[in-house]
Length: 422
View 1 (cartoon, rainbow, N blue to C red):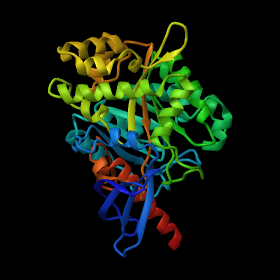
View 2: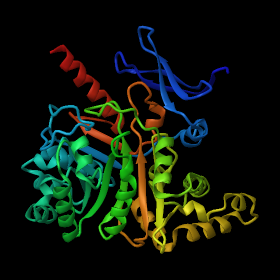
View 3: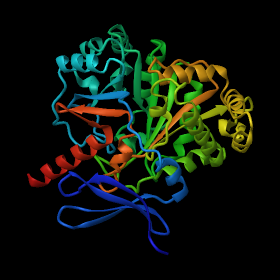
């Protein structure tokens, strides 16, 4: 079968890390990126095994640049864990100063700010950093220090309202393999403290092939059990950046199928919900809250979906209650779309989503529906810079601002080369 060129784009040179031309091709089996570095060496890297899903998510005819919605700031070069899987290779970057935090908060006053790095709670002045942001801040943490209720109370007293909490599973075997320790009891204690102090939490789970794929169902069950303060579940896969386990990367199509199989829902329903949201973005972009498209629009590396817990304990997708054919064939298309919008999600969840897309704190109105974000990291060989333009998240590190994934890839490779030259 002849090779089909799907797209011309830009990528990074594995040799110099500079921007170079690249092609996205379908070779009859897989969607791959093909590019040559400055010395003529050619690279071919897998992007997807599912061509239809790639075409659906890549949005080839609809290029756009997202506005910055989330600014991650490198806060700490220290960590209290030595995890096997971490996108930060080492802790020798420059820690952000209090003055820089204040400047970022002022410049990006309409954005969320994330305190990240190796482990932000290793900063002794973390409380002053939180206070300096004026409240629009997320603490990105492994949660170890939050096992102290006194510590959590102090975080809240300085203005902390939201936490990204690393939680890779519900048994210690998982934490031994990924984080090199029996951490479950400590993490559960930390989450209990977060709940007591009424701080919103997003659980962030790293899923590695052959390690913890079986944890998706327990993670979803855990989130529903604690929906009073857990506002979202994020599931991301490993990629060969930073410190990573030696496992084959899980592709986005595989991750979607893994979620569908784990929750016993139809993958087609998940994709129907996605298509429905894109239809709304296309037809009603002017009416939607600012930032809605950037959060929920088509991206090759991520997907936002919802899961509903039925009264019988089973799970379902809002897509199962949406008929796209009836919408597209209807004379009163707008009426039909709004009918399915309320039918699929319920009015209270729509209010919740609208507030979140407008960068308000995530409130939980409808506790029987959970927001899940799937994320697959690109690497130096398959990163599509045009796709990166659609990402609303940037990383401030060493005095420079860059798209989050681009920053991680470049930083990791530079550190790897430095260590090789020692």
